[in-house]
Image (cartoon, rainbow, N blue to C red; front, side, top):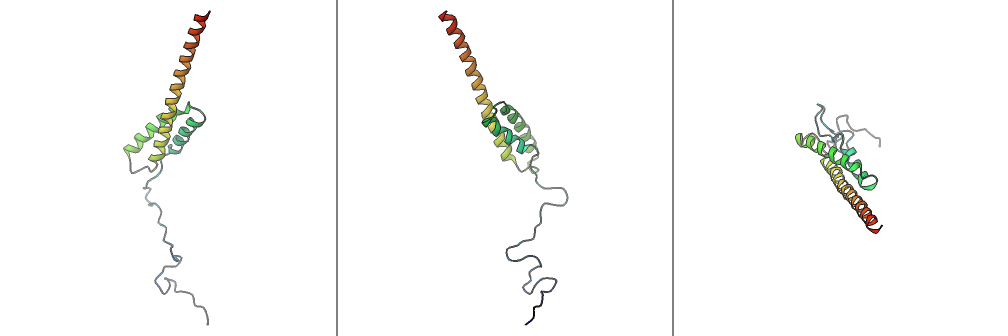
Length: 123
């Protein structure tokens, strides 16, 4: 018995060369420059939003404003960008961090006023 390779146009069962069981040809995105891509600031907004909650609350307003601007761009051309969810998540983290930052500033001001009034009444 000798081995004979399959014919160049495919094997005896009609399979194309290079495509075994379960393999499909890879087409990718169009060659004309079209297709959906991620918003260029999407990852930055998400990272800033998460960092504003975890490390530095001052990044919250930055993530909020950048998220608003990016969402306007995404809404203006919805078929161009695919990462609306991550932009929204970063924006929401920025909103939450901004609210917590404002509440913290208000609490500090109230404590300062309470401390100043108690020291002037006690003396």
